[in-house]
Image (cartoon, rainbow, N blue to C red; front, side, top):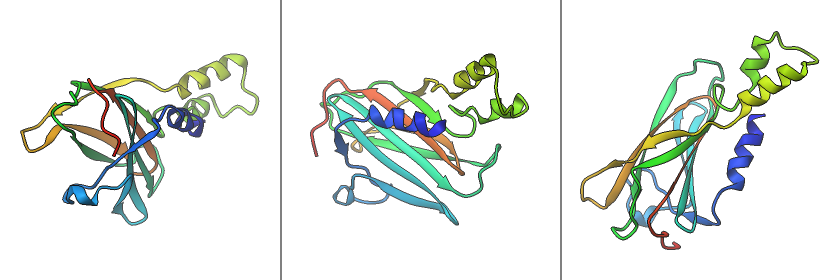
Length: 173
């Protein structure tokens, strides 16, 4: 089930909560998570953790209509860090939504069997696996940002988890 994959990634989360903030606020307003409304009954929530030099960013969308082909929202994450941290050029991206780590479409394609065969169970298990994608961390100018990431998620329900390893651990906030 997709919820299992979401908890699997949460289990990997670091033990330090990092501050995050919506664009347009000063660093003094940073919190350990935030939600931004994206329309009637829908929102995007972001939080970040660290375990030593490994940073994990969790981006979740919820609310709205759930159907294959739902419109997507693109989230831009600006990574604010000191010059001593050393940001890599890429991050690993894993997703859980209607098209990723979700065996429902495979089950429906099989005709929604009440008692799937062992081969069908294997197909559904394969469809539920997390897939690693690579996302570029784009360098930005010298305004205090180290880099920027773009992630697209469905407006209905989705989870994207990015992780990368810094050259040195971030300071505990």
